[in-house]
Image (tube, rainbow, N blue to C red):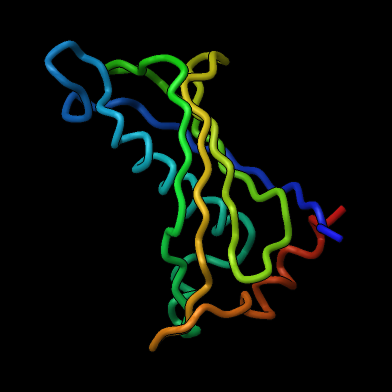
Length: 138
């Protein structure tokens, strides 16, 4: 049985000129940078910062990315970047993303990250990390 979680957080991003091409359109790679900003902020809101995972001897490398670009973002846009965890992870955690401009969806995506011990080897999430998620399990 899969346990469902609803923990969600939003960060606000203002598109910088350097993130756009000559037409003022954001290059697709920057969406993933913004997703990373949202993912790190989500971990902070959870009360288990990304840095703590590393200090405790774990890494979270990306093993899969999925993206759907719905509309372009442009220089000087004010964007909302959402990150959420929907399911309790076993050895991998999936983060779901949405990027919006004034309520209009521009991007949907997800990233999967394996829990890996320093020195190698996929493993289960740290017990303390799971305990932080438990209040959000439905």
